[in-house]
Image (cartoon, rainbow, N blue to C red; front, side, top):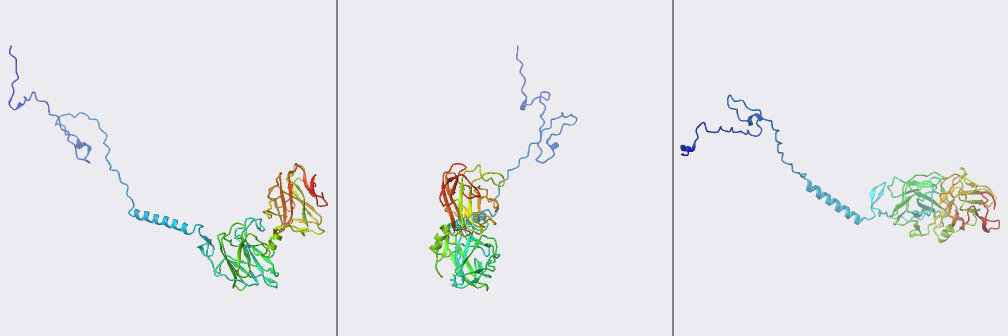
Length: 411
């Protein structure tokens, strides 16, 4: 049986009946052409099967690169220069610059040519960092300036002016106020202006603890005295020794002559005050209720004279190193032989009829002080640990002992 073999045709072509239908070629239109142009044309007379619509591929968008400003390098250079200037300024002025309201920002060490006034009125003492030396009429420890009459005659201060330099607009001008020979006047430098006769004086500027300048002008506007004071720590005073010499001192004497005797007198109890402390109760739950019916620690003051004594502006304290801790309110007047208590409640109520000090008393014992308006101690009493509702009382003979409290009355 012969095997059938398919004859091979020249060229390898197959008969038309055996040829495979041609696969239509899909033409891809260029980017941006209408979607219909991507499809090949269907043969004439032939129905084109429906083709699923493919979602258009997302177009590729090149990532934008970050572009720096054209002057970025210059900005970096300026920043570095500013930083370098700041470091240099800190090295040159580690304490910073003081601000003068009349001249703007100036160095704290600015000075003037000093005028050493010979009188009759001149700057005598100042304190630029008052922590506990003197308390003003508002109960605050403000910086202060002292002027003195160094002549042998009475001088009216009216028209004399204090300022920080000759072009200052914030100045203090004295009203009608006569100083006797050797007398002094205090001006508190706390940036509040008060220059009425009969009231405490306040200047509309402050003194810098880093040092500065102060000038005194006579009523004609002529500078008659000036001083360049140095940096000073708390409660240090710049004290005039003579016409041209000044010194830093821990012995401040506000309102008094600049002498050791004045300092001693200022810090030793007065013997002529006429007012004394007569009773102290440091743990009270039964005696002398206040205006609200509450009980507080208290101490008692007694007018030992036969005339009324006005204690307005006097001070009481529980700290030996700070005798001007709390100021008695205006209108606190003790009549002859009157006893009156001051509550040591810590409530700080400035009521002449019901005064409440800003401090309380320790049950373990401490000191109570009474000082006059200049801060000079008029009486001081030390007490130890006491039982509750027991007083430390002064007897008629001046001796102290524990006893039953008798607030507002003789012991």
